[in-house]
Structure formats: C-alpha cells, structure tokens
Image (cartoon, rainbow, N blue to C red; front, side, top):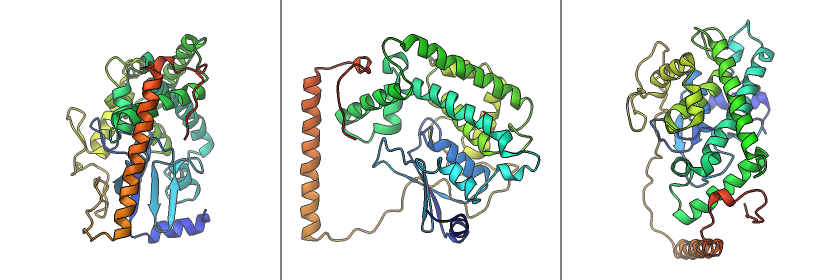
Length: 337
C-alpha cells in the first residue's frame, strides 16, 4: 500500500478517478447499499469522478473500490474506501469542521456501521424467510443464470446468519434485538440531527454519507412491508434530509421512477465541470480480430461455464427444492468460495 504522501500525490495527479460500483436500480445511481455511501461521500466532497459498473463479481466484498493513478482503495481493506481516503488525507470531510474532532464523530459512525448495518443485512437476506429475494437478485445476481444466482443467494443467507449469530433456537429473540437496536439508532440520530442540515453543523462529514446511504436505500429499495422501513418513516427529519440529498447529489427526484438522471440538477453547492460521475457504462472498444489461441480459450471458457451450470443443476436436484429457510446453521452443507 502506498504511503499517505504517495497516495495523496497520486490522487492529485490522476487524470481520472473511477468509482467501481454495482449497477443502478430503485431510482438510485447504484443499487448497492455498500456502494451508495461511497458515491455520496465523493459527491459531497465535490470530487470529479467516473462510475464504472462491475457485474463480474456479484457477491465480492472488495466492491466498491476507487481507482486513481496507480492506486486502488478496496472496500474490504483498511476499513473501507471512505476510511482509506480519510486516513490517507486524500478526501476528509470531517477535517473541514474545526470544532468537531474525530472522537466526536466515531460513536455515531459506529452506531450506523453496526446496528443499522446489521438491521439492513437482516432485512435483505433473512427477514420473512428470504422474502426479499427479488431485491437481492436485482442488486447482485440478475446477470447470472437463475440456478447460480439462487445458490449464491442461499450461501449469502448462511453467511449473514452466522455473522449475526442467528440459529433456529434464537431467531425470534435475535429479530427483536436487531429491530430494537435499529430503532434506538434512528431515535438517537434523529435527535442529533434536529433541524440542522447535517449531523454536525451545516456541512457533511463521512458519517452523513453513511447515514444517508442507509436511509436512501431503505426508503427506495425495501418494500412497503419492510419493518425497518416502517420504523425509519417515523422520523420525519431523517426522511426529509434523505429526500433533499437525493435531489441535490443523486440527481433523482424522490417522486420520479427509474434510474438516475444523466444530468444532475443544480444545487447551491458548486460542481466542478470535470465531474462525470453519471457515466455508468464503459466506452465501447473497437473490435479486433481474435487469434486462433483466443478462440480456443473462449471455447474452453464456454465448456467450463457449461460444466459449472450442470454441476449446479445436479446440486439443485439433490437438494430437492429445499426452501431457503431450511438452510440454517444446523444444515450440514459446505460451499466453495
């Protein structure tokens, strides 16, 4: 990993800065609840950047990541993209608040990163015996064949249950605990926000990016039947803040349907003209004639994928249509990463 000085110099000298995220959806520029706070953080920082959608690794934990010069900041390293940019003194919104120390911000950040993050994970993968499969599919697995996507979904359910320490014996108690903590977090954050524009005075910090990413995802992606969404909607100032930010930074009116607009509306915050943060598709490359070796490699790749698909179908036939709710901690099934 480059030193702070080297990384900061790379950032300043980089001709392009690219946020690699998952694709848009639910009226948001990225449907991924992990990618959205990073995008908001960069927008709040008025940083010019491109967005590139990566669908090759549907459940990879290194996404989102930011590329600049010879450096890459991955989500699964150094505390995540936002933390890396802050620690390397590349982009640090909190430092713009002379009266606010990071020790003041840390407890609020921890509450969002634990209690609210756990509640969102629970809603997305576990709640109502996986009733939100269609949402998870749209975010992570829609570009995969259905059987492979379904198996990866079941695998993720097991991982989240293990992460949250949920078993058949304690499922009801854990659900109550998760929602109790989420409600307490919403209450504390709503009180902290009050009538301010952001959590700390009238300009954003990295905590605001985390909170707004969470709130926007819950309000726009989760269905009306979601318990987490119903709890959140009890706090008018949190909802209003998210709606205002969606118009100013995300570029989509909360009443509009569909994907994010390619022309973000103007706001009171000046934007750098070099910003192209609305580009979601890589530029098409000119076609070139494939060599015989490349053709052979592609044929082998197709055979490999076909073999993988057949193995998944065999696996599903053996499973005999097991419901995802049965994939609990006591189900002895091993998956390969």
